[in-house]
Amino acid sequence: MNKRNLLLILFSIIVVMAFYSPLRELWILSSDDELYSHIFLIPLISAYFIYLKRRDIFQNVSYSFKAGLIVLITGSLLYVVGLSQGFRLSQNDYLSLMIFAAVLSWIGGFILFYGMESVKTNLFPFVFLFFMVPIPGMIVERAIAFLQIASTEVSYGLFKFTGIPLLRDGFIFHLPGLSIEVAEQCSGIRSSIALLITSIMAGQLFLKSAGRRIVLALVIIPITILKNGLRIVTLSLLGVYVDQDILSSSLHRKGGIPFFFLSLIFLGAILWLLKRSETTSSCRKM
Image (cartoon, rainbow, N blue to C red; front, side):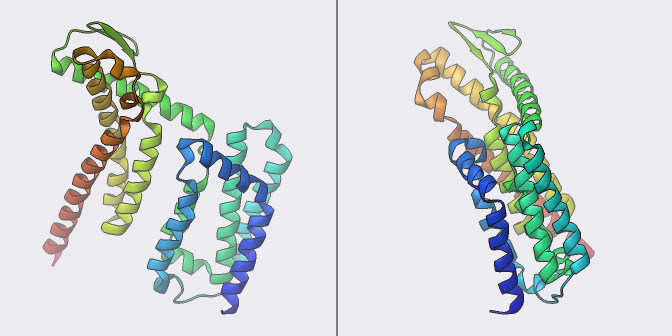
């Protein structure tokens, strides 16, 4: 084992020890909250992408004390702020700050031992590590509110398309024999995060153009909203025409899985179109 690798391993151990308490709380959070069940897969995925690009990343390594220390000191200062002011934050936001500091500190160490050029050569796996950071509560609340409103509008349009009689009252739809509410739980925030991570990985693996990668990530928003609308309308129609008990059954609670796979099909189709357009553009240039 060469000296740089040994130094990075030792430094990684120090980071884990320094951030042991927040990392332990993050583990508990990822086990208890489905919104963050993906978190501890993130470093494994980043490691995989580093392995894929290992020749580019480790081709010209050099110590980069200035850049590495700037990033490392920034992470350390955030760590100190978290320790001294964390009591002013919610548990979720405290973890957001501390895990952000941990990731930033580790990246600073990597830059220190391998050089800024090694990171700039393939920035993706290092930036991807920030998906370990819990989303600040204010952002989650606003995202849920947006998805709830948008899903309600799409559901209303789909209901009108089916021709079923209905009366709308805000987030509540009054249908023949029953009323349903598009609650915050219907926002699909968990599946949207999973889809976003999937789309970013797929874009990195299969697309070369940064613009097309961004498009693939952004289409997650309409896909999620459409998926939510289809799920709400499908379950509601089953409740009206088949059995109202469906709305309180396991099909309602776990019925999002088939619609998630439907979202993956939509995502795959868009990826195929983007890949095809990329290939066509390359052929024209030739």
